Amino acid sequence: MRTVSCIPWLAAAAVALTLISCGSKEMAISEGSRHQFKGDYTNFVLSGEFQTEPGASACVAFHNDGTGSGYQVLLNGGPIDGTIKSGSLLHVRNLYRALEEEGEWTPLEVAVRGKNISVKIKGVDVVCYTEPTQPWRLPQYEKMRLGHGAVSLVGGKGTVRFRDMKLTKLPADATNPCDTLPPIDESTDRAIQLQQEDFPVIDWHVHLKGGLTAEMAHAMSMNYGINYGVAPNAGAGGVGRMLSNDEEVYEYFDEVKDMPFLRGVQGEGRKWTADFSSEALGTFDYLFTDAMTIVDQKGRIARIYRNEEVRPEGLSDQKYMDLIVDQTVKILTNEPADIFANAFFLPDFLNDRFDQMWTPERVAKVLDVMQENGIALEISARYLIPNEYIIREAKKRGIKFTYGTNNVDANFGRLEYSIDMTKKCGLTADDMWFPNLSTRASRPTVIYNHFEGTQVSLFNGKDLTGWVPVTESESEEPVFKVEDGCIVVSGKPNGYLRTARQYGDYSLHVEWKWIGSGTNSGIFQRIQEGDKVWPTAYECQLMAGRAGDIVSLGGARIKEVPYDPAVKFPMKKRVHSGAQIELPDGEWNRAEIICKGDKMMVYINGSLENEATLSYKTGYIALQSEGGPLAFRNIYIE
Image 1 (cartoon, one colour):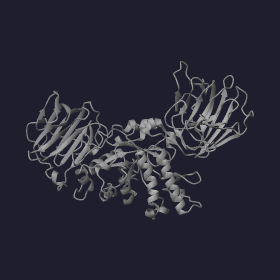
Image 2 (cartoon, rainbow, N blue to C red):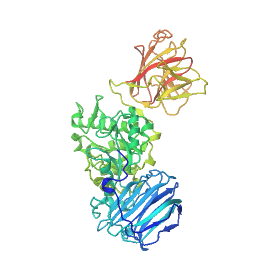
Image 3 (spheres, rainbow, N blue to C red):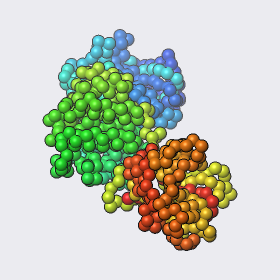
Image 4 (cartoon, rainbow, N blue to C red):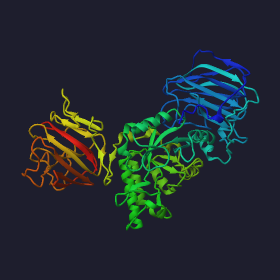
């Protein structure tokens, strides 16, 4: 992709009649102030630069004849927070992402040629609106029409500065050669009607695929008056632009960062949380995922939008529906998405009974986790879901909404179903989600699925990428370091080296050996939030002579060990207590720790030494520093 400075059919050319210039002098326009250019204007080009400060806004007003007529182009920077942003043709083509940074000088161009109004920010076309013969207007905007009149810079809030402003009159027959798409019939267009109400009209779920290019999406967005959020897929199994690792994420973002779209990303499949760092995905304005890919009853990836991958195999329709609900809850609990896309989708063999399958109890399970995690609900224009009942229930809970299409190609409509449901369910602008409401950064990423035969390395053998040290005090020498492809732990001070991500079900493989005489250490499972030297967690004991004991820390409970508040570290001893199952000091030992749901099994050098029932089903994994030095290697999960 490339930065769109002017779509081929949006290039501008004009013959100047009269030029009014403010020179290089700066102007400060503040609240209540106005700079009006001399003269009466019909066709014109206004160009120059502007600079906003945080919280400041102003507008370019034109064709104002003193009776409230004409239009305004807003200048308002800042984050994507639901407020209308720079370049917007107010109440007609409202935009919700500012291309400029507050405090930077930004090129601006506003032009009127016949019935066409165009706006450029930083050389990028953001508005190309052709007023139809019968524009649709709310009563308060009845006079918002093209005609002639003054051109002014009008203060809003704070101070906006302008420089090098030039106003050029154009001939009466001036046209915009970029204006080749037919004007929208506003009498039947519901998007323009929402724009008049300053309701955010945004399709957050657009993919560049099926012949849809960035340039086409740009032109369609301006013509339809619908803001587009364009997103690639991060993961595996999708269609269109696919990203497979952090490096590709950063490369893609560099391509699109200056384009006039909201910049999203879709977590695709059920392995994306393991393949991408939260830092890389955090560069995007928003992240969404769906439950159209699940892990079925036999541990297989099933894309339920493909009939050949839907294999109930002995499950009744109701049981398969329960599987979909359970998987949806797991996805929304463990994958830190902003938006639940394609929400409440069902495979073909269940979809004809959508209302019966999505019982109030099942709907409540999904909405509960959405409400708890601040996840927005997409109203899908493509799949015509969710139904009115689900949307109303979500609104009662204060859940926010987005519109989305998930297009197949370049012909994907204008959010008709989404707008219908907005009207039927009484949604207002305050019900709509924006990135400033995101909870994604504060939510842990949990690797919760266990895929047979899939090995995920937790240690790259080179550095401590993906690990977080926690110690009770500072140390002159590193407590954790990498030597000869191993993690070497000094043993002092006390602490641990934990994974940056949380994990659910897995089989953990770790090899360890003592450096010198065996002393004390451990491998922590299910560490809960809140880093402290003795966390809430379960320790697979590695103390010499006791490897395989399970110790509960920080109030974590083991069902098989009666609770006694007087016991600081309750323990379930290994099977072969007192036996020599560890290898001699200096030799590599092997631990296999299987965590599935609330169950934990520990193998030491191939011998099953312990089983326990835990009170936590997800958490971080860690290597302990306590006692003496030791080394770890071959650390991976399956």
